[in-house]
Length: 241
Image 1 (cartoon, rainbow, N blue to C red):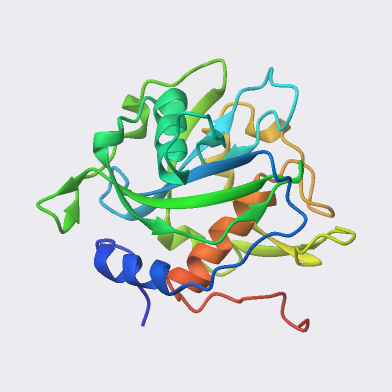
Image 2: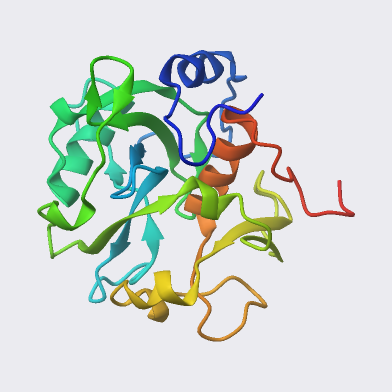
């Protein structure tokens, strides 16, 4: 069964169990002297729909300007673990206090373009009574404008809608990433509400002006939907293995 359904709640206990059951792997090609973590924030949007909180990188950044991503960054020496890194970065970037986030578990590390092992840490935002979430108004988050241009909640029902998931061929050489990478298209209305997102780099072969969640963030999001939520979403591009 799936771990959520549009219009309901995130079943946190089940998600935590599935995160614990995920196979653990070590990235042999990752740099040994540095690591990073991202927070994968599960929330309810303003309409009480299960959603994922994402942000848009500021336009003036030298790398990945306008990219849609999860909050996160490189581990500091004072961080106790990946969860500590993810929570610290989410607070620095989005003003999201660690006390508002209930950590549910971790996904397997992903290799960044800079050969850094990045651990996705899954957390639920604004838990009430231990079982449900309060709706999150992303517009009320206090963003760090030097890093983030916007934050928004992307509903699960959109992520699972037919036509949202697309696949793009990418030459990744020897790295352990799929040859066809997943991307999640935003609607024109969703994209128009996000500053600078239209200026981000696009997946190979995607139409001009189309805004997607892709790259490492798209890979993590796809893994969340397929491996953790077990939503029935395609695990690979149809017709490939």
